[in-house]
Image (cartoon, rainbow, N blue to C red):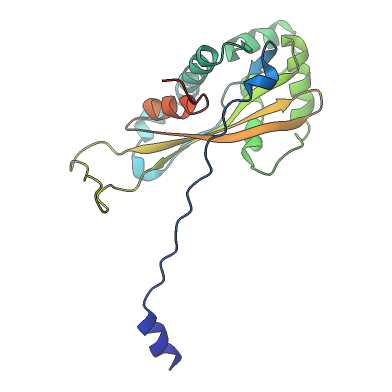
Length: 213
């Protein structure tokens, strides 16, 4: 009887929950201050996107992602004095080994959504780097993940052309850290869609400053 009842009820459909909205950059609290913008260290893409060839050169991928992020953030939030990744690298090189290379830090660990206290040795490394660059805070893109969007065609949605490029969602995990206290003060996951890694990332970064085109 139990089996018959289960069959009669049919399969249950689990309702998908929408991801939380992107929180805008907290520029009101850091306006007028020097804020380090660290380089990205982790980029990953779902296999179904077939972007292995596009993202295979890790150094080139990270460099281009850093350029997109830094260019858009500095242009769209000019009230903050941003210290770009290349400037942080120069400060680290001038330190004679006192400060670590910003691109070699374990910042990807900060993508964990419940992490508040920055663990050592990252905590002390960030404090040293900020002391050289000036200021107190660092904005850290902790991870960039590309996921394939479900195919269109449900309900009134238009069906994509048969051989059109896949549309992906870029998910940029980004945090603001108080380097003196070693604590995460703000975090969000910025999302944007595109048919290639860079258009999707551009839309994700733009989501951090709503109200601008």
